[in-house]
Image: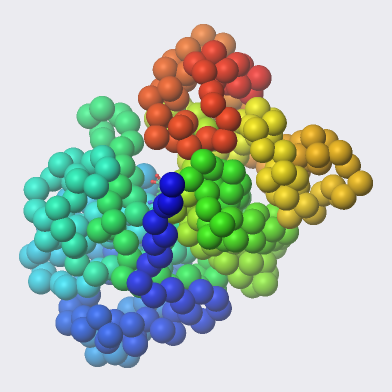
Length: 383
Ligand SMILES: NC(=O)c1ccc[n+]([C@@H]2O[C@H](COP(=O)([O-])OP(=O)(O)OC[C@H]3O[C@@H](n4cnc5c(N)ncnc54)[C@H](O)[C@@H]3O)[C@@H](O)[C@H]2O)c1
Ligand SMILES: [Fe+2]
């Protein structure tokens, strides 16, 4: 069996990558651009930096700076309406996953019409949307490279995704200088999310030699840099390592997918309003303890990448060092370690399990098969 490999059309990664925005817009033959971001990004002065580049290029543009956190379907539809009424032909998404997802969805809606709900699911988007330039300011969700976009359905109080090749960015610009203003809490949560992308895609059923290169390098970079990026946010070297790490993890995730950590984390977001990165970080050691036995070699690779001394250890012991390393890391970052810290009570375990078992696409990509009872047991251990 083989798996396809996809990437954004062009990627610029590293300090000053933003300087390539103008030339990329010229190549896209942009006539009018819509800049999509949230109020926090505008306040941090990041929208202004992009506007400066647009002005230097003499480009006509409009700004939609009303992206919601964990955006709703209404929010992406509003952005699409502005694209249509303003006649913009290229979209720039600037921000964390929320802003990038709104830009991705609005670009598709601008040509496909209808409601974003029509396209929720796998490959339901009928054709290409407008070209997008995605510029992350967190490190990160990897949304600049993934083929999905996630929205909150307010009426059902759940989040659902659009998964489509047509969500692929024309250009990804990953400039660590834009993450220097990212607050410590957001840096910690999004950084752990990126680490989970690297770890889960490295051990995924759909992992290939191609994605493995990206994933393992990402584990190494993020493992070394995340503490510094959180506690010394001005450190451009750490921010650069995180930008590369989250980008490489995003490439691996976009192709190999993720597994049980994400599957078990989703119900925590939906029911207990725990942010995506925090929920993943919390469940990570418990799921890894369960998964390690399914692939001792790959777990030992990751332990070494995380700086654990593994050469003198037996394979099983080496593999379990990953659990220790990630537990120490998320503890150092001050993230919650137990479900009860985020408001989960023993009587909620069945509800969480009911939510997790629905994530079949993720569960079947996990290196070790999970039964319903085993999922419940993992939640119970994490309680
Ligand atoms: N499409 C995908 O592949 C994908 C993958 C994972 C998660 N997501 C989605 O992404 C969203 C979460 O994204 P996120 O965690 O990146 O955060 P976010 O976009 O929700 O932003 C969080 C907060 O951080 C602020 N912020 C971000 N960067 C900043 C910076 N450099 N300086 C100052 N403030 C900054 C924002 O203004 C916002 O207030 C969720 O909706 C999640 O479902 C999407
Ligand atoms: Fe994630």
